[in-house]
Image (cartoon, rainbow, N blue to C red):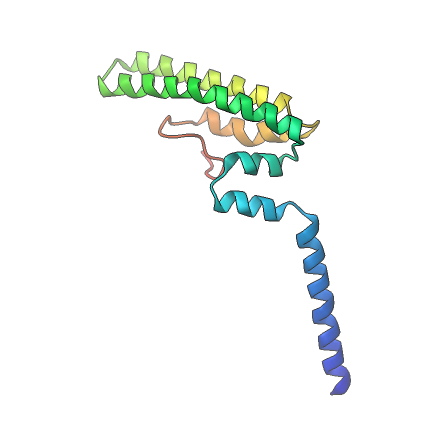
Length: 142
């Protein structure tokens, strides 16, 4: 029985060390914090391993695009509110999707090699099925 308890203690200690090492060496703490705080930019930085210069360039792109995005959303909502013809609404939605796609490609170009492709693989499928009922969300599959 004495060896049993020593074995259990050794296994628990090894598991604790393994978990602690894994926790400290990966990006999960940053990702979890970003998710808890609904901070998309912190998530982007941690998930795609951005350095300070890349993050600053992407943040500027994001901030600049926010104005354009707001204009597109306002135009689409206005057209829907005044019951504009479906062709007009579809044209406005296409402008929005094309602008988002171009924006995402500019963001990807600022990322490290390989991360930009992974980013586009994450965000572009959401653009193609975008309903224009709020910002695209990487958590929900279209």
